[in-house]
Image 1 (tube, rainbow, N blue to C red):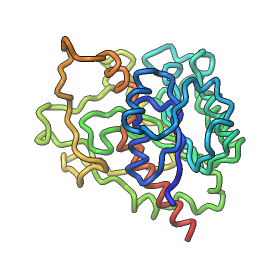
Image 2 (cartoon, one colour):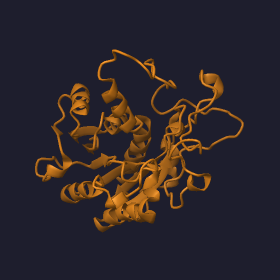
Image 3 (cartoon, rainbow, N blue to C red):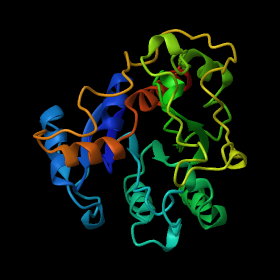
Length: 289
């Protein structure tokens, strides 16, 4: 049977789409934004949806094998003040509360790289520590959209927590190797744009300095090798990419344009979730043999 999934902070369904592609079954979604709820209803009409995460008791949610979500990034984003756990928008405690109530086998968390540095690292420590207190073993890595074939970086922190991985056999190198995406950022000949967008460049507001780009403690490993000669690996996990959508940056008469841009800006890259989902499925099949 496929792994069942509960989606917190669902947005427009990036996690849900990626994990479905990995063979999982979405059982419920939690998202308070009305426009995002309409998107979810269109693509998952039979999946129960709930609103404000802070009002849920857990009794209304079906127990699932995996809970996923990217809780709001504003408290830890390098583009903001990085108040972290002191920010009213720090909603990790709500995520942790529902995980504790439902007790899934797996937890999958995503956030921006600023999670590593907010509160001098204590925000990240709170996430890992809370999961450990609930009985989970955690692994994490920095995974970007370029790692799965997109012509931009969009680096994100990904945390996988497993409640039954203390036997030492869950995330073997063989498991990683079998499910590894084989694509890197597109070569220039594949795109009309001469360069890959990089939000880490120092000229960008809130951009990270070079010494901040690689964080210590990554345990899941990189999903591919970066070559310096521009060669491209096989096709990405989930289809072809375009650098920009057909809609221009300045467009009049586009319905719900602000909502669309906000939804896309807050969304995760489904191909990243798909790759990690395939790792989880492969690990589950291996340990169930």
